Image (cartoon, rainbow, N blue to C red; front, side, top):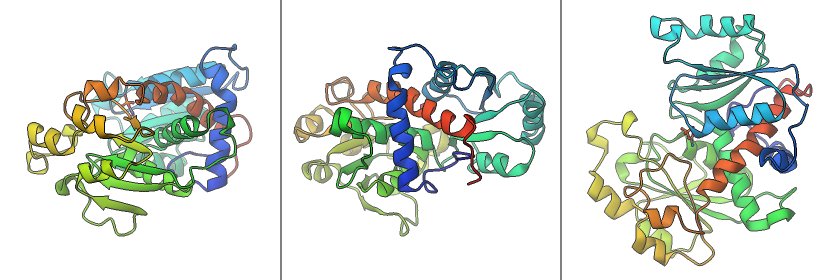
Length: 316
Ligand code: CP
C-alpha cells in the first residue's frame, strides 16, 4: 500500500489485513510491551491544517511506538498563515526527508492532490479532508466493533450481518462517509438517521438506508449506535434546527439510551457535544466505546504507518 487516502478504495482483504496488523500492534500501542524498531530512521510529519486532539496525538504515539522520528506541523503559527501554498509546504517537507505525511486539511481532496502531485515522495495518510473522508477513524471504529463482538477471536473476520445506525450531521461528516464505505465492504449494514437538512441531496449511490426517525431506529435494535458531532463550524443557521429541537429529536438522551437493546453498543468519534447529540449517561456508560475507540486508534494508526513505511509499499 503506497498511500491511505480513503476507505472507498480499500478491498475487503486490504481492510481485514490492516485490522489484523492492528491486533498485532495492540500490546505495543497499549504499552504492555516496549516499542518496536520497525520504523527506525524514518521520519513522519503530522501536517495539520485543521484542529485535532485525538488524531494528531494518536498518530504521534503510533509513529513513536514504531521508533520513527516525528515532526508536528500546525498551520497555525506556520508560514501557511503568510500565504505559503500546499506545494511549497510539501516541497519544504520533502527537503527535510519526510518518509510519511499525515495530513488533515479543510479542503476535500487535499490528500489526493498531495499524493498525486510529485511534490514529495512520501506515503500520504488522510487524517481528515473537508467533508470527504477520515479513513483511519473508520478503521479504528471497525476494529472496535470487531473486538466488542469477537474479542481475541477477531483476526480474519469482517463485520458480516452487523447493523450500524449512524446518527446526526451526515451532510458534513467525513467520518460517516469513511464508515459507510468500510462497513459496507466488511459486510455490515448501515442506516443513517438525520434531520432532512443534514442529509446530502443525492445519496442514491450510497449502500445505506436513510431515515429521519431516531426512535424507530432505536426500536429496531441495531448492534451499534454511532452518534456524530454537529459540525457547527461547517454550516450556516439555515441547516440547523436549534439545539433544543435537535437534541429532542436526534439526540441520544437518557430516555433513548435506556431503550437501547441490551446488546447495543454506543460509539462517538469525538469530540462530543455532551447534552446535544449524546447525554453524559450514554457517553460514560459501559456500553460506550468512546475511550476504547481512542485507545484502538493508536493500534490502527501503527498498522497504517507500518503498511506504508516499513518497506512493503506497493503502487496502488
Ligand atoms: N475523531 C477525531 O478526528 O477527533 P479529532 O478531531 O480530535 O482528531
